Length: 297
Image (cartoon, rainbow, N blue to C red; front, side, top):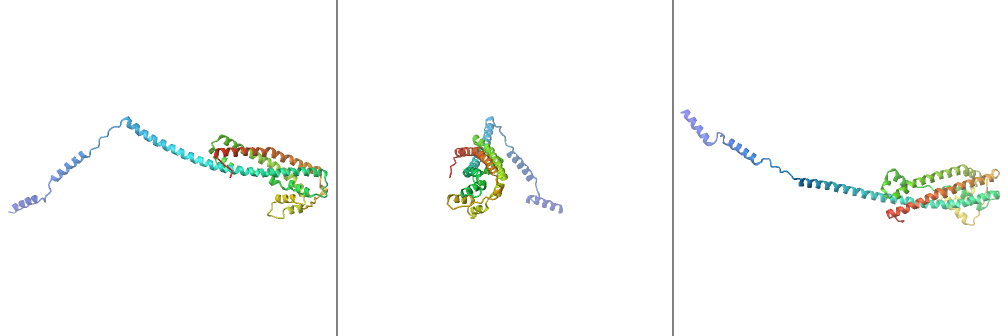
């Protein structure tokens, strides 16, 4: 009985689905096989030569256009930089031109004073000196700085040292700019010769024979430049009594020769070094105006 009861219970469990069957496993395997058949590796079609060529052409055009765009951007940036440098360089040259003009005017007046003193030392008494003598004396011995032109080359040095001169596409402009450095060096060398002679010969003479009282008269107002004060006294009728110091040590031949040789140096500088610079300065200003459409404000 017991054995039959167990068989009946087993049959009942089978009917109720409590015992696992192998059917789901078989169905799962079939499903996997079907999925594998559905998701098989796609077939790759070979491209023909035309398609490869079109792809290459598209890539080539993209790279080329990028290269061209970058070159245009760099060219635009270089043109802007060149315009900025040209304007700064132009202003520097224009400022130097005005400074040179003033130096030449002061130098011309000084040359007149040199002529006067050479004649006075040769023929006149230094025991009693006139107002005219006093004015010319100080033009010779006290106006050195305002008669010397010192070029300002800050922008020029930047152009050379930074390699920015390459931004100027004009060969004429590049050549003139290079020449300017030579002219400036020559001006400075000649200025040094002039300064050395002035310091060694004219300053000692001034220290020996100057009338400090008259110089103090020119310098009494610190707000007025000494040269302007001298010009004011030169233009009015106010008398100036100049006392020539240490007359006993005065050697008129030495005095005439000293300022005479100094005049040769100053004239040589003005007629060669300064005039060469003036000519080149004007050429550069003209080329810069033409190349970059610059105008004086």
